[in-house]
Image 1 (tube, chains in turn blue, orange):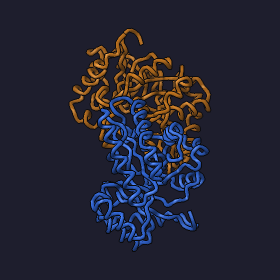
Image 2 (image 1 turned 90 degrees about the vertical axis):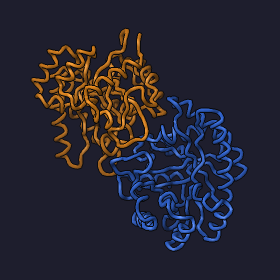
Image 3 (image 1 turned 180 degrees about the horizontal axis):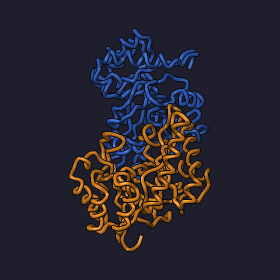
Image 4 (image 1 turned 90 degrees about the horizontal axis):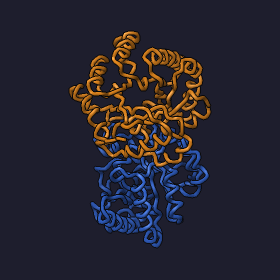
Length: 273
Length: 273
């Protein structure tokens, strides 16, 4: 991070805005980066989206998302691999250096079998990502999502998988919402050095109303974002910080208001100089 | 466990039943044990409850709960200590060998400071528990409860705390709902031997609707209860298994129906011989 931490706006935060509305809002607000979700890119098509992004001067931190490697059948898992190839192509097209991997939920009752599907899946897309010069960022999700989105739920588990695959193309994405309460995070301090591909922030408030949409704007909850930011900086990550707030509340508001709230929340964190 | 796993009915599962209704239902259904919550014991008073339990012939696995050691002020934390003393007295009175510790949520944004409050709190009640011959069972809760009920969220963290305090009066309570998705559980296999004070089961279904009341009856979700049971058995725990289902759905049903459903669900797990 240079003098002032840079913000990247993760587009899911205001999911009803069009890509053009987001790019224009970013330009008007001095937000230098975005992290788009693939469904947003699909709305205008990849080629047109890539042109809009290039014309806007807004840069990309990551594309959300690849992964979802777990599945009941080999057909489902093979379809996921093909979809990851397309996601890598899209990342290249829009200039995203990182493809975020949401690795897929536990299948049936088999935690470790599902984890193996993730390892196998990443191994299958590794060469393709490498030749495309796209980093694969394993994002451990909160354990409450183990049955719905990702059986990879701790930083250490993500590092273990990355070690197994053993390639500089595999890194880790740290999302404060997913890992803030993990008491064992400090033990990964040395291991994660040079391996952070992104840093996402939002905040934790109670009560939880569902796995996905219970987040708050950064600064409004109980996450010690300063501690996590320091940890990520010490790991050598100096890129923009993604504000990614999946929130039923903020989705129900005027999306331009939600955009502005995200920008204001980030500014108020006062992560300066 | 002898020929057939024994069930203990955790009273929160059918919280609208009176203690007498639960004891009678257990006797009628061949359920040998219960695990009462303190508010249920309070309804008839401790002395009368103890007499009812004794007269019923139903035994107690644990009293739920002590703990809640974290607090904004020293006054709040001291009040919690006093309440834990009363909980230990109640455990003695009703013949509960174990007091379950739900250790208390993170205070403010300070995970490790809150953890220290837990360590300090347990240390303060240790001698009292020891002289009363009551085991203190640290129950790690699911990470989604870190801000609402317990900043102790992994078995390993609970073992670390137990090691620090270093007393045979401190053991660990394993609740399948809280620890099922922890990929690092196997690494605690050796450490936890001889240290399990209880085993609770329910099941995980999605979507989560809140931190507390989203559970399903054992067998109806995605938890590999067989794997966890084997793990707990290998750790040397051969006591009754508590069915503890905090469920908005089952709380909304006729509580006698809910009781019967819990008994039936346990029986269907077919944990025989």
